[in-house]
Amino acid sequence: MADLAIGAPAPDFTLPADSGRDISLSDYRGQKVILYFYPKDSTSGCTAEARAFRDHLDDFKALGYAVLGVSRDSVRRHCNFRDKNELNFPLLADTEETVCQAYGVLKEKSMCGRKYMGIERSTFLIDEEGRLAAEYRGVKATTHVDELLAALRRQ
Image: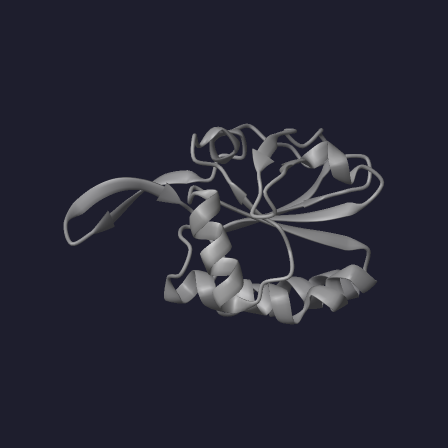
């Protein structure tokens, strides 16, 4: 697992986005970022979480946050997922798993007795200077966005 510390610089990266261009975390310096990692496009949990971010994007923007979603899916899959769910924030394709590794979100999972490495649903808050402000690991797809928004409103 990556050794991330609150207050330390968040690992920078550049990844292809569903917009057809590359996005770097450093593009957002001067703005707060919600960087969320999810396992797979078009699954029920990931769809529910993405729609919740979509539905509350104006609330997050009002609090000064941009939202970036990251999974190991391809840009093409991201485009289909975005279009089907009318998503209004960038989806980044970490097909080489470099950003997942940098943030320590890959973990061993098991399905039907088969073990594999998958993304642990996680969210990182990054401040205007590019420093890690908070991390939420192993969050629930259906409740995380509401809980995150409530916590940010209390700050």
